[in-house]
Image (tube, rainbow, N blue to C red; front, side, top):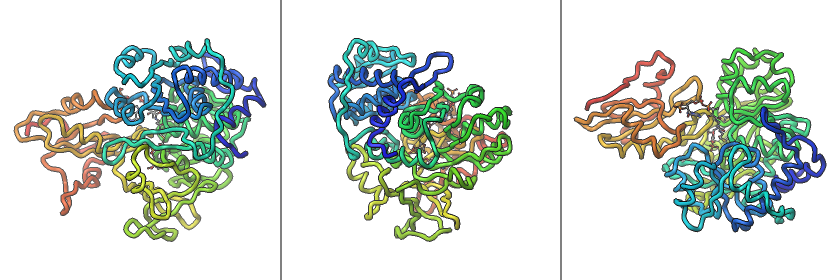
Length: 516
Ligand code: MCA
Ligand code: AMP
Protein backbone atom coordinates (compact mmCIF):
# COMPACT_ATOMS: atom_id res chain seq x y z
CA UNK A 1 0.00 0.00 0.00
CA UNK A 2 1.26 3.50 -0.73
CA UNK A 3 -0.36 6.07 1.50
CA UNK A 4 -0.75 9.64 0.25
CA UNK A 5 -2.01 11.03 3.52
CA UNK A 6 -3.26 9.30 6.66
CA UNK A 7 -6.60 11.03 6.07
CA UNK A 8 -6.90 9.55 2.58
CA UNK A 9 -5.99 6.06 3.74
CA UNK A 10 -8.54 6.32 6.55
CA UNK A 11 -11.28 7.47 4.13
CA UNK A 12 -10.52 4.57 1.80
CA UNK A 13 -10.82 2.11 4.67
CA UNK A 14 -14.06 3.71 5.83
CA UNK A 15 -15.55 3.47 2.36
CA UNK A 16 -14.40 -0.12 1.88
CA UNK A 17 -15.65 -1.39 5.26
CA UNK A 18 -17.96 1.16 6.88
CA UNK A 19 -19.28 -1.22 9.53
CA UNK A 20 -15.85 -2.32 10.68
CA UNK A 21 -15.08 -1.33 14.26
CA UNK A 22 -12.69 1.59 14.38
CA UNK A 23 -12.58 1.71 18.15
CA UNK A 24 -14.07 -0.31 20.95
CA UNK A 25 -14.16 1.58 24.22
CA UNK A 26 -14.60 -1.04 26.93
CA UNK A 27 -17.57 -0.24 29.14
CA UNK A 28 -18.57 2.62 26.86
CA UNK A 29 -19.36 2.26 23.19
CA UNK A 30 -18.06 1.15 19.82
CA UNK A 31 -17.38 3.42 16.87
CA UNK A 32 -17.43 2.10 13.32
CA UNK A 33 -15.34 3.50 10.48
CA UNK A 34 -18.57 5.03 9.11
CA UNK A 35 -19.12 6.81 12.44
CA UNK A 36 -15.54 8.01 12.27
CA UNK A 37 -15.91 9.28 8.73
CA UNK A 38 -19.01 11.32 9.52
CA UNK A 39 -17.37 12.58 12.71
CA UNK A 40 -14.40 13.87 10.71
CA UNK A 41 -16.75 15.72 8.33
CA UNK A 42 -18.63 17.38 11.16
CA UNK A 43 -15.51 18.30 13.09
CA UNK A 44 -14.03 19.77 9.92
CA UNK A 45 -17.19 21.90 9.63
CA UNK A 46 -16.73 23.06 13.23
CA UNK A 47 -13.15 24.04 12.45
CA UNK A 48 -14.31 26.04 9.44
CA UNK A 49 -16.94 27.71 11.63
CA UNK A 50 -14.18 28.83 13.94
CA UNK A 51 -12.24 30.33 11.06
CA UNK A 52 -9.66 27.60 10.54
CA UNK A 53 -8.20 27.57 7.04
CA UNK A 54 -5.37 25.67 5.37
CA UNK A 55 -2.06 26.17 7.18
CA UNK A 56 -3.66 27.32 10.45
CA UNK A 57 -2.52 25.61 13.63
CA UNK A 58 -5.11 23.87 15.77
CA UNK A 59 -3.73 23.33 19.29
CA UNK A 60 -5.34 20.53 21.26
CA UNK A 61 -4.89 19.76 24.96
CA UNK A 62 -7.61 17.27 25.83
CA UNK A 63 -8.09 13.95 27.58
CA UNK A 64 -7.71 10.86 25.46
CA UNK A 65 -10.69 10.18 23.19
CA UNK A 66 -11.39 8.79 19.74
CA UNK A 67 -12.90 12.18 18.89
CA UNK A 68 -9.51 13.78 19.47
CA UNK A 69 -8.11 11.47 16.79
CA UNK A 70 -11.00 12.39 14.48
CA UNK A 71 -10.17 16.04 15.14
CA UNK A 72 -6.65 15.36 13.87
CA UNK A 73 -8.12 13.88 10.70
CA UNK A 74 -10.48 16.84 10.39
CA UNK A 75 -7.43 19.12 10.41
CA UNK A 76 -5.96 17.03 7.60
CA UNK A 77 -9.19 17.35 5.63
CA UNK A 78 -8.75 21.13 5.65
CA UNK A 79 -4.98 21.20 5.34
CA UNK A 80 -4.74 22.65 8.85
CA UNK A 81 -1.84 21.80 11.15
CA UNK A 82 -2.59 19.59 14.16
CA UNK A 83 -0.76 20.56 17.35
CA UNK A 84 -1.39 18.07 20.15
CA UNK A 85 -0.21 19.02 23.65
CA UNK A 86 0.58 16.82 26.64
CA UNK A 87 -2.29 17.04 29.14
CA UNK A 88 0.28 17.42 31.90
CA UNK A 89 1.50 20.81 30.64
CA UNK A 90 0.76 23.68 33.00
CA UNK A 91 -0.59 27.13 32.16
CA UNK A 92 2.86 28.66 31.83
CA UNK A 93 4.00 25.88 29.51
CA UNK A 94 0.86 26.33 27.40
CA UNK A 95 1.37 30.11 27.23
CA UNK A 96 4.72 29.47 25.60
CA UNK A 97 3.31 27.08 22.99
CA UNK A 98 0.46 29.42 22.12
CA UNK A 99 2.80 32.40 21.81
CA UNK A 100 5.15 30.43 19.61
CA UNK A 101 2.72 28.52 17.37
CA UNK A 102 -0.02 31.20 17.19
CA UNK A 103 -2.87 28.73 16.72
CA UNK A 104 -6.17 29.82 15.18
CA UNK A 105 -8.04 27.55 17.58
CA UNK A 106 -7.24 26.05 20.97
CA UNK A 107 -9.25 23.00 21.99
CA UNK A 108 -9.15 22.37 25.73
CA UNK A 109 -10.82 20.16 28.33
CA UNK A 110 -14.37 21.26 29.20
CA UNK A 111 -13.36 22.31 32.72
CA UNK A 112 -10.74 24.73 31.40
CA UNK A 113 -12.95 26.47 28.84
CA UNK A 114 -14.09 29.54 30.72
CA UNK A 115 -10.69 30.52 32.04
CA UNK A 116 -8.99 29.97 28.69
CA UNK A 117 -11.60 32.01 26.86
CA UNK A 118 -10.69 34.87 29.16
CA UNK A 119 -6.94 34.33 29.12
CA UNK A 120 -6.19 33.50 25.49
CA UNK A 121 -5.14 36.20 23.03
CA UNK A 122 -8.13 37.55 21.07
CA UNK A 123 -6.82 35.97 17.87
CA UNK A 124 -7.24 32.45 19.29
CA UNK A 125 -10.71 30.87 19.33
CA UNK A 126 -11.26 28.44 22.23
CA UNK A 127 -13.52 25.38 22.25
CA UNK A 128 -13.65 22.31 24.46
CA UNK A 129 -13.65 18.57 23.92
CA UNK A 130 -14.25 16.04 26.70
CA UNK A 131 -13.33 12.38 26.98
CA UNK A 132 -16.96 11.34 26.48
CA UNK A 133 -17.52 13.12 23.16
CA UNK A 134 -18.80 16.12 25.12
CA UNK A 135 -17.78 19.78 25.02
CA UNK A 136 -18.52 22.83 22.92
CA UNK A 137 -16.66 21.65 19.82
CA UNK A 138 -18.85 18.54 19.50
CA UNK A 139 -21.98 20.61 20.20
CA UNK A 140 -21.00 23.03 17.47
CA UNK A 141 -20.18 20.16 15.08
CA UNK A 142 -23.55 18.43 15.58
CA UNK A 143 -25.53 21.22 13.96
CA UNK A 144 -23.32 21.72 10.91
CA UNK A 145 -23.26 20.29 7.40
CA UNK A 146 -20.20 18.03 7.20
CA UNK A 147 -17.26 19.05 5.06
CA UNK A 148 -16.91 16.10 2.71
CA UNK A 149 -14.42 17.50 0.23
CA UNK A 150 -10.79 17.13 1.26
CA UNK A 151 -8.17 19.74 0.46
CA UNK A 152 -5.67 18.25 -1.95
CA UNK A 153 -2.37 17.93 -0.13
CA UNK A 154 1.10 16.82 -1.12
CA UNK A 155 3.80 15.06 0.82
CA UNK A 156 5.59 18.34 1.55
CA UNK A 157 2.57 19.98 3.16
CA UNK A 158 2.71 20.44 6.89
CA UNK A 159 0.53 18.00 8.87
CA UNK A 160 1.49 18.53 12.49
CA UNK A 161 3.72 20.33 14.94
CA UNK A 162 4.93 18.42 17.98
CA UNK A 163 6.87 20.28 20.63
CA UNK A 164 9.98 18.71 22.05
CA UNK A 165 12.03 20.39 24.73
CA UNK A 166 15.63 21.10 24.02
CA UNK A 167 19.02 21.25 25.62
CA UNK A 168 18.61 25.02 25.98
CA UNK A 169 15.42 24.50 27.97
CA UNK A 170 13.34 26.17 25.27
CA UNK A 171 10.85 23.83 23.52
CA UNK A 172 11.00 23.55 19.74
CA UNK A 173 8.10 22.74 17.46
CA UNK A 174 9.03 19.85 15.18
CA UNK A 175 7.24 20.31 11.83
CA UNK A 176 6.05 17.01 10.39
CA UNK A 177 4.75 16.75 6.87
CA UNK A 178 2.08 14.48 5.40
CA UNK A 179 4.93 12.69 3.64
CA UNK A 180 6.70 12.03 6.95
CA UNK A 181 3.59 10.49 8.48
CA UNK A 182 2.42 8.61 5.40
CA UNK A 183 5.74 7.05 4.40
CA UNK A 184 6.56 6.08 7.97
CA UNK A 185 3.14 4.51 8.39
CA UNK A 186 3.65 2.56 5.15
CA UNK A 187 7.04 1.34 6.33
CA UNK A 188 5.67 0.22 9.71
CA UNK A 189 2.63 -1.54 8.24
CA UNK A 190 4.97 -3.55 6.04
CA UNK A 191 7.59 -4.16 8.72
CA UNK A 192 5.14 -5.37 11.35
CA UNK A 193 2.69 -7.09 8.93
CA UNK A 194 -0.05 -4.92 10.35
CA UNK A 195 -3.42 -5.32 8.57
CA UNK A 196 -7.16 -4.80 8.90
CA UNK A 197 -7.24 -8.13 10.74
CA UNK A 198 -5.38 -6.62 13.67
CA UNK A 199 -6.90 -5.58 16.96
CA UNK A 200 -4.59 -3.16 18.71
CA UNK A 201 -4.67 -2.49 22.44
CA UNK A 202 -4.25 1.28 22.49
CA UNK A 203 -3.16 2.31 25.98
CA UNK A 204 -0.69 5.10 25.14
CA UNK A 205 -1.38 8.82 25.32
CA UNK A 206 -2.28 10.35 21.96
CA UNK A 207 -0.35 13.60 22.17
CA UNK A 208 3.08 12.15 21.30
CA UNK A 209 4.47 10.28 18.32
CA UNK A 210 4.19 6.79 19.76
CA UNK A 211 0.45 6.77 20.56
CA UNK A 212 -0.51 9.10 17.70
CA UNK A 213 1.70 8.61 14.65
CA UNK A 214 2.61 4.99 15.28
CA UNK A 215 -0.28 3.26 17.05
CA UNK A 216 -3.31 5.31 15.97
CA UNK A 217 -2.15 6.17 12.45
CA UNK A 218 -1.36 2.55 11.68
CA UNK A 219 -4.81 1.43 12.83
CA UNK A 220 -6.64 4.20 10.98
CA UNK A 221 -4.70 3.64 7.77
CA UNK A 222 -4.86 -0.16 7.85
CA UNK A 223 -8.53 -0.34 8.77
CA UNK A 224 -7.72 -2.19 11.99
CA UNK A 225 -9.67 -2.03 15.26
CA UNK A 226 -8.39 -0.28 18.36
CA UNK A 227 -9.32 -1.46 21.83
CA UNK A 228 -9.18 2.07 23.07
CA UNK A 229 -8.17 2.40 26.72
CA UNK A 230 -8.06 5.67 28.63
CA UNK A 231 -4.58 4.89 29.93
CA UNK A 232 -2.24 2.03 30.72
CA UNK A 233 -3.25 -0.19 33.62
CA UNK A 234 -1.60 -3.60 33.65
CA UNK A 235 -4.71 -5.51 34.74
CA UNK A 236 -6.99 -3.87 32.19
CA UNK A 237 -4.50 -4.49 29.40
CA UNK A 238 -4.12 -8.13 30.45
CA UNK A 239 -7.90 -8.53 30.53
CA UNK A 240 -8.07 -7.54 26.85
CA UNK A 241 -5.23 -9.65 25.52
CA UNK A 242 -7.39 -12.64 24.76
CA UNK A 243 -9.34 -10.46 22.38
CA UNK A 244 -6.48 -8.52 20.77
CA UNK A 245 -3.53 -9.15 18.46
CA UNK A 246 -1.04 -6.32 19.03
CA UNK A 247 0.19 -4.13 21.90
CA UNK A 248 2.44 -1.10 21.47
CA UNK A 249 3.98 0.40 24.57
CA UNK A 250 6.86 2.03 26.37
CA UNK A 251 9.20 -0.16 28.47
CA UNK A 252 7.32 0.71 31.68
CA UNK A 253 4.28 -1.11 30.22
CA UNK A 254 6.32 -4.27 29.87
CA UNK A 255 8.05 -4.12 33.23
CA UNK A 256 4.66 -3.61 34.90
CA UNK A 257 3.17 -6.51 32.91
CA UNK A 258 6.04 -8.76 34.01
CA UNK A 259 5.58 -7.66 37.62
CA UNK A 260 1.85 -8.36 37.49
CA UNK A 261 2.62 -12.06 37.74
CA UNK A 262 -0.32 -12.68 35.43
CA UNK A 263 1.61 -13.27 32.19
CA UNK A 264 1.27 -16.79 30.87
CA UNK A 265 1.05 -18.25 27.35
CA UNK A 266 -2.71 -18.51 27.97
CA UNK A 267 -3.27 -14.84 28.93
CA UNK A 268 -1.59 -13.73 25.71
CA UNK A 269 -3.10 -16.48 23.54
CA UNK A 270 -4.69 -14.11 21.01
CA UNK A 271 -1.66 -11.87 20.68
CA UNK A 272 0.74 -11.98 17.74
CA UNK A 273 3.00 -8.97 18.41
CA UNK A 274 4.31 -6.86 21.29
CA UNK A 275 6.17 -3.67 20.33
CA UNK A 276 8.30 -1.53 22.65
CA UNK A 277 9.87 1.85 22.07
CA UNK A 278 10.44 5.45 23.23
CA UNK A 279 13.08 4.39 25.76
CA UNK A 280 15.49 1.49 26.21
CA UNK A 281 13.88 -1.83 27.07
CA UNK A 282 16.00 -3.60 29.67
CA UNK A 283 17.27 -6.96 28.44
CA UNK A 284 16.03 -8.47 31.73
CA UNK A 285 12.48 -7.39 30.97
CA UNK A 286 12.74 -8.71 27.41
CA UNK A 287 13.93 -12.09 28.71
CA UNK A 288 11.41 -12.30 31.56
CA UNK A 289 8.57 -11.45 29.18
CA UNK A 290 9.73 -14.11 26.75
CA UNK A 291 10.07 -16.71 29.49
CA UNK A 292 6.53 -16.01 30.71
CA UNK A 293 4.77 -15.76 27.34
CA UNK A 294 6.95 -17.24 24.63
CA UNK A 295 6.86 -13.84 22.83
CA UNK A 296 10.00 -11.86 21.98
CA UNK A 297 9.11 -8.17 22.34
CA UNK A 298 9.92 -6.29 19.13
CA UNK A 299 11.93 -3.20 20.06
CA UNK A 300 12.11 -0.27 17.69
CA UNK A 301 13.69 3.18 17.80
CA UNK A 302 12.26 6.56 16.87
CA UNK A 303 12.20 10.25 17.59
CA UNK A 304 9.66 13.03 17.32
CA UNK A 305 11.74 14.64 14.57
CA UNK A 306 12.16 11.47 12.53
CA UNK A 307 9.16 9.25 13.30
CA UNK A 308 10.35 5.64 13.44
CA UNK A 309 13.92 4.92 12.36
CA UNK A 310 14.79 1.27 13.01
CA UNK A 311 12.98 -1.87 14.05
CA UNK A 312 13.83 -5.38 15.07
CA UNK A 313 12.57 -7.83 12.47
CA UNK A 314 9.06 -9.23 12.47
CA UNK A 315 10.25 -12.48 10.94
CA UNK A 316 13.79 -12.74 12.26
CA UNK A 317 15.71 -12.72 15.47
CA UNK A 318 14.46 -9.95 17.80
CA UNK A 319 17.52 -9.21 19.85
CA UNK A 320 17.29 -7.86 23.37
CA UNK A 321 19.26 -4.67 23.82
CA UNK A 322 19.17 -3.75 20.13
CA UNK A 323 16.77 -1.66 18.07
CA UNK A 324 17.19 -3.64 14.86
CA UNK A 325 17.59 -2.46 11.28
CA UNK A 326 16.72 0.77 9.41
CA UNK A 327 13.13 0.83 8.16
CA UNK A 328 12.35 0.87 4.45
CA UNK A 329 13.83 3.97 2.71
CA UNK A 330 15.46 5.19 5.94
CA UNK A 331 19.24 5.68 5.90
CA UNK A 332 21.03 5.39 9.23
CA UNK A 333 24.73 5.90 9.81
CA UNK A 334 26.99 6.01 12.79
CA UNK A 335 29.44 8.89 12.46
CA UNK A 336 32.55 10.04 14.25
CA UNK A 337 31.51 12.65 16.82
CA UNK A 338 34.48 14.89 16.05
CA UNK A 339 34.92 14.85 12.27
CA UNK A 340 31.56 13.42 11.15
CA UNK A 341 32.98 10.62 9.00
CA UNK A 342 30.91 7.45 8.77
CA UNK A 343 32.24 4.71 11.04
CA UNK A 344 32.46 1.00 10.25
CA UNK A 345 30.36 -1.64 12.01
CA UNK A 346 31.43 -2.24 15.57
CA UNK A 347 32.46 1.35 16.27
CA UNK A 348 30.43 3.69 18.44
CA UNK A 349 29.48 7.18 17.28
CA UNK A 350 26.67 9.64 16.62
CA UNK A 351 23.51 8.17 15.10
CA UNK A 352 22.44 10.18 12.04
CA UNK A 353 19.34 9.71 9.90
CA UNK A 354 18.17 10.66 6.41
CA UNK A 355 14.99 9.78 4.55
CA UNK A 356 11.35 10.64 3.91
CA UNK A 357 10.68 10.18 7.62
CA UNK A 358 12.82 13.15 8.65
CA UNK A 359 10.94 16.31 9.64
CA UNK A 360 10.95 19.64 7.84
CA UNK A 361 12.60 21.59 10.65
CA UNK A 362 11.76 23.44 13.85
CA UNK A 363 8.92 25.91 13.65
CA UNK A 364 10.34 29.40 13.12
CA UNK A 365 13.85 28.32 14.15
CA UNK A 366 15.82 28.03 10.90
CA UNK A 367 19.19 28.35 12.61
CA UNK A 368 18.41 25.70 15.18
CA UNK A 369 17.20 23.45 12.36
CA UNK A 370 20.38 23.98 10.34
CA UNK A 371 22.56 23.18 13.33
CA UNK A 372 20.95 19.77 13.77
CA UNK A 373 21.70 18.58 10.21
CA UNK A 374 25.04 17.61 8.68
CA UNK A 375 26.19 19.29 5.46
CA UNK A 376 25.05 16.24 3.49
CA UNK A 377 21.56 16.32 4.93
CA UNK A 378 21.60 13.81 7.78
CA UNK A 379 19.68 14.66 10.95
CA UNK A 380 21.83 14.38 14.06
CA UNK A 381 19.71 12.45 16.54
CA UNK A 382 21.83 13.13 19.63
CA UNK A 383 21.87 9.39 20.34
CA UNK A 384 25.05 7.35 20.38
CA UNK A 385 25.17 3.88 18.92
CA UNK A 386 26.91 1.21 16.94
CA UNK A 387 25.96 -1.39 14.38
CA UNK A 388 27.00 -4.93 15.26
CA UNK A 389 28.38 -7.46 12.79
CA UNK A 390 24.89 -8.58 11.85
CA UNK A 391 23.71 -5.03 11.15
CA UNK A 392 21.61 -4.57 14.29
CA UNK A 393 21.78 -1.07 15.76
CA UNK A 394 22.60 -0.76 19.46
CA UNK A 395 21.86 2.51 21.25
CA UNK A 396 24.64 2.89 23.76
CA UNK A 397 24.04 6.35 25.16
CA UNK A 398 23.07 9.94 24.47
CA UNK A 399 25.09 12.92 23.34
CA UNK A 400 22.24 15.14 24.46
CA UNK A 401 21.43 15.94 28.04
CA UNK A 402 18.08 14.19 28.27
CA UNK A 403 16.20 12.08 30.79
CA UNK A 404 13.53 9.64 29.60
CA UNK A 405 11.08 8.85 32.37
CA UNK A 406 8.37 6.32 31.62
CA UNK A 407 8.74 7.18 27.94
CA UNK A 408 8.41 10.95 28.47
CA UNK A 409 11.38 13.16 27.64
CA UNK A 410 12.58 15.64 30.20
CA UNK A 411 15.36 18.08 29.37
CA UNK A 412 17.39 18.82 32.52
CA UNK A 413 18.09 22.41 31.48
CA UNK A 414 14.42 23.31 31.75
CA UNK A 415 14.28 22.06 35.36
CA UNK A 416 17.67 23.49 36.33
CA UNK A 417 16.64 26.98 35.19
CA UNK A 418 13.60 26.81 37.49
CA UNK A 419 15.52 25.41 40.46
CA UNK A 420 18.23 28.05 40.12
CA UNK A 421 15.53 30.72 40.59
CA UNK A 422 14.52 29.31 43.99
CA UNK A 423 15.74 31.61 46.81
CA UNK A 424 18.73 30.08 48.56
CA UNK A 425 19.89 27.97 45.59
CA UNK A 426 23.38 28.58 44.22
CA UNK A 427 23.16 26.08 41.38
CA UNK A 428 21.72 22.74 40.43
CA UNK A 429 22.19 19.76 38.15
CA UNK A 430 19.38 17.49 37.04
CA UNK A 431 20.13 13.91 36.04
CA UNK A 432 18.26 10.71 35.28
CA UNK A 433 18.93 7.91 37.75
CA UNK A 434 17.97 4.26 37.19
CA UNK A 435 14.41 3.66 38.39
CA UNK A 436 12.70 0.28 38.54
CA UNK A 437 9.39 1.53 37.14
CA UNK A 438 10.11 4.61 35.01
CA UNK A 439 13.51 3.43 33.67
CA UNK A 440 15.03 6.75 34.66
CA UNK A 441 13.84 9.13 37.36
CA UNK A 442 14.34 12.90 37.19
CA UNK A 443 16.61 13.77 40.11
CA UNK A 444 17.96 17.17 41.14
CA UNK A 445 21.25 17.79 42.91
CA UNK A 446 21.30 21.22 44.51
CA UNK A 447 23.96 23.45 46.05
CA UNK A 448 22.44 25.78 48.63
CA UNK A 449 23.73 29.19 49.66
CA UNK A 450 25.63 29.34 52.93
CA UNK A 451 23.17 29.92 55.72
CA UNK A 452 20.12 29.16 53.60
CA UNK A 453 17.60 26.71 54.99
CA UNK A 454 16.36 24.63 52.14
CA UNK A 455 14.84 21.24 51.98
CA UNK A 456 13.58 18.88 49.34
CA UNK A 457 9.92 19.82 49.82
CA UNK A 458 10.64 23.56 49.49
CA UNK A 459 12.45 23.11 46.21
CA UNK A 460 9.77 20.82 44.78
CA UNK A 461 6.97 23.14 45.91
CA UNK A 462 8.71 26.18 44.41
CA UNK A 463 9.13 24.72 40.93
CA UNK A 464 6.01 22.56 40.67
CA UNK A 465 3.34 25.08 39.69
CA UNK A 466 4.95 25.71 36.31
CA UNK A 467 5.99 22.19 35.53
CA UNK A 468 4.18 19.11 34.23
CA UNK A 469 4.05 16.39 36.90
CA UNK A 470 6.26 13.92 35.04
CA UNK A 471 9.02 16.54 34.78
CA UNK A 472 9.11 17.21 38.52
CA UNK A 473 12.10 15.67 40.32
CA UNK A 474 11.25 12.46 42.16
CA UNK A 475 14.02 13.41 44.61
CA UNK A 476 16.08 16.51 45.39
CA UNK A 477 19.52 15.88 46.87
CA UNK A 478 21.83 18.44 48.41
CA UNK A 479 25.59 18.70 48.09
CA UNK A 480 28.34 21.22 48.93
CA UNK A 481 29.63 21.44 45.35
CA UNK A 482 28.87 19.92 41.98
CA UNK A 483 31.66 17.80 40.48
CA UNK A 484 33.33 19.67 37.62
CA UNK A 485 36.00 18.84 35.08
CA UNK A 486 38.99 21.08 34.35
CA UNK A 487 36.92 23.08 31.88
CA UNK A 488 34.42 23.83 34.64
CA UNK A 489 31.69 21.66 33.12
CA UNK A 490 29.46 19.80 35.56
CA UNK A 491 30.20 16.09 35.36
CA UNK A 492 26.79 14.56 35.31
CA UNK A 493 28.23 11.10 34.81
CA UNK A 494 29.83 11.36 38.23
CA UNK A 495 26.51 12.39 39.76
CA UNK A 496 24.78 9.47 38.06
CA UNK A 497 27.43 7.08 39.36
CA UNK A 498 27.39 8.50 42.89
CA UNK A 499 23.63 8.15 43.20
CA UNK A 500 23.05 5.15 40.96
CA UNK A 501 21.23 3.14 43.61
CA UNK A 502 19.06 5.91 45.03
CA UNK A 503 15.83 4.34 43.82
CA UNK A 504 16.84 0.79 44.56
CA UNK A 505 16.24 1.02 48.28
CA UNK A 506 19.89 0.51 49.24
CA UNK A 507 21.27 3.88 48.22
CA UNK A 508 23.90 5.81 50.08
CA UNK A 509 23.00 9.16 48.62
CA UNK A 510 22.96 12.30 50.73
CA UNK A 511 19.35 13.31 50.98
CA UNK A 512 16.96 15.31 53.06
CA UNK A 513 17.13 18.87 54.26
CA UNK A 514 20.15 21.04 54.24
CA UNK A 515 21.22 23.99 56.28
CA UNK A 516 24.17 25.51 54.50
C1 MCA B 1 3.20 9.42 35.54
N1 MCA B 1 4.01 9.96 36.47
C2 MCA B 1 5.25 9.99 35.98
C3 MCA B 1 5.16 9.44 34.69
N2 MCA B 1 3.89 9.10 34.44
N3 MCA B 1 6.41 10.41 36.53
C4 MCA B 1 7.50 10.30 35.78
N4 MCA B 1 7.50 9.79 34.53
C5 MCA B 1 6.35 9.37 33.96
N5 MCA B 1 6.34 8.88 32.73
C6 MCA B 1 3.72 10.45 37.81
C7 MCA B 1 2.27 10.57 38.11
O1 MCA B 1 1.89 11.91 37.92
C8 MCA B 1 2.19 10.15 39.55
O2 MCA B 1 2.58 11.18 40.39
C9 MCA B 1 3.25 9.13 39.72
O3 MCA B 1 4.20 9.43 38.68
C10 MCA B 1 2.79 7.70 39.54
O4 MCA B 1 1.82 7.66 38.53
P1 MCA B 1 1.29 6.31 37.92
O5 MCA B 1 -0.17 6.23 38.17
O6 MCA B 1 2.15 5.19 38.32
O7 MCA B 1 1.58 6.63 36.42
P2 MCA B 1 0.72 6.19 35.24
O8 MCA B 1 -0.43 7.09 35.08
O9 MCA B 1 0.48 4.73 35.36
O10 MCA B 1 1.69 6.51 34.02
C11 MCA B 1 2.88 5.82 33.79
C12 MCA B 1 2.96 5.53 32.30
C13 MCA B 1 2.77 6.85 31.54
C14 MCA B 1 1.87 4.53 31.92
C15 MCA B 1 4.30 4.91 32.00
O11 MCA B 1 3.75 7.77 31.96
C16 MCA B 1 2.75 6.69 30.06
O12 MCA B 1 1.75 6.31 29.47
N6 MCA B 1 3.90 6.95 29.42
C17 MCA B 1 4.00 6.87 27.98
C18 MCA B 1 4.68 8.08 27.45
C19 MCA B 1 4.72 8.10 25.92
O13 MCA B 1 3.72 7.91 25.24
N7 MCA B 1 5.89 8.34 25.36
C20 MCA B 1 6.10 8.31 23.92
C21 MCA B 1 6.70 9.62 23.47
P3 MCA B 1 1.77 11.60 41.69
O14 MCA B 1 1.09 10.36 42.17
O15 MCA B 1 2.84 12.10 42.59
O16 MCA B 1 0.87 12.64 41.16
S1 MCA B 1 7.05 9.50 21.70
C22 MCA B 1 8.67 9.07 21.70
O17 MCA B 1 9.29 9.01 22.72
C23 MCA B 1 9.40 8.62 20.44
C24 MCA B 1 8.97 9.27 19.18
C25 MCA B 1 9.30 7.14 20.30
O18 MCA B 1 10.31 6.54 19.92
O19 MCA B 1 8.22 6.63 20.54
P1 AMP C 1 11.34 12.08 21.57
O1 AMP C 1 12.12 13.12 20.91
O2 AMP C 1 10.58 12.51 22.75
O3 AMP C 1 10.46 11.48 20.61
O4 AMP C 1 12.34 10.98 22.08
C1 AMP C 1 13.25 10.40 21.22
C2 AMP C 1 14.35 9.74 21.97
O5 AMP C 1 13.86 8.60 22.66
C3 AMP C 1 15.42 9.20 21.06
O6 AMP C 1 16.32 10.20 20.63
C4 AMP C 1 16.08 8.16 21.95
O7 AMP C 1 17.01 8.76 22.82
C5 AMP C 1 14.90 7.63 22.74
N1 AMP C 1 14.41 6.34 22.24
C6 AMP C 1 13.34 6.07 21.47
N2 AMP C 1 13.21 4.74 21.26
C7 AMP C 1 14.22 4.15 21.93
C8 AMP C 1 14.66 2.82 22.13
N3 AMP C 1 14.01 1.78 21.63
N4 AMP C 1 15.77 2.60 22.87
C9 AMP C 1 16.46 3.63 23.40
N5 AMP C 1 16.10 4.91 23.27
C10 AMP C 1 15.00 5.17 22.55
